[in-house]
Picture 1 (cartoon, rainbow, N blue to C red):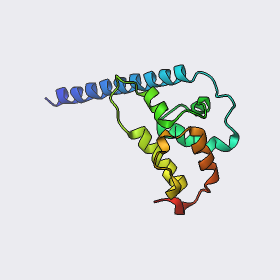
Picture 2 (cartoon, helix red, strand yellow):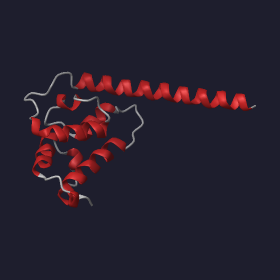
Picture 3 (cartoon, helix red, strand yellow):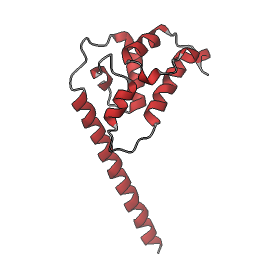
Length: 135
């Protein structure tokens, strides 16, 4: 009985890991298909911290955010990662919005997820990293 339970738990964990890995691979393929080349013009080095925060929030491979054009929105990227046949959650937009609030504080626009990333990067650069910005 104990052996059967352990084998069941291990099989369940293995299937869960396979599904998670397959889903992450599909998201990365959709991202690379939508944004195959670095954006023109290239993102300036000053936007590196903003792009790193975006990559962490959306669980993108390191350097992938540099392929994004400035006029794409965070929700546009989210809808590429999760097309209409996927089950939506709000973890990526929530993590990105939290990163913006952490940097911009009360100056965070209410429609931040629908603003172009270039505009958000400019606001990010303009805001000094300040622990007082935390809400």
